[in-house]
Length: 177
Image 1 (cartoon, rainbow, N blue to C red):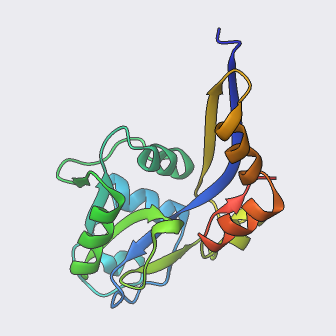
Image 2: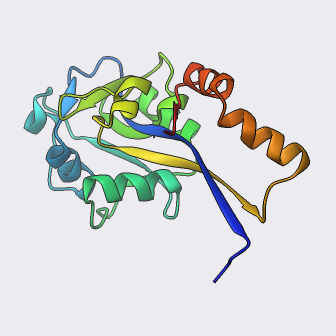
């Protein structure tokens, strides 16, 4: 329908599941994550943590991160009362302030103020995204109308170059193959 459209898949980013640094949970399964985000699992002691109600933080409906997480984990519907936040920084801030919270942000946005949780025994990293072993990722794509020219072409060529790949890896992005 749109013959002029060109797309350039230049990288993949992990969607990191994050908790408060003092939360003892180090890993979850995809099934447990689905249970938490659908409301079937409500207490941390159901997934190896200390007794306490899980405070679920999610992105707003339509967010690319939320869509990617729901697709990768198989989340059908979020329960009523789940807290929706409009930005990745907002999710990170809510999680760093609440020991009972769980949320998700892009790996490129993770700081030391939160702790990443392994999923099915795999911690998100550039290496696990490149290897295809981390289960929750999202592609990063640039779209142009027609063949790119000028500065746009220069930028895309840079992203697809070895130098661009090195820069992306420094920012915790996994260059696309």
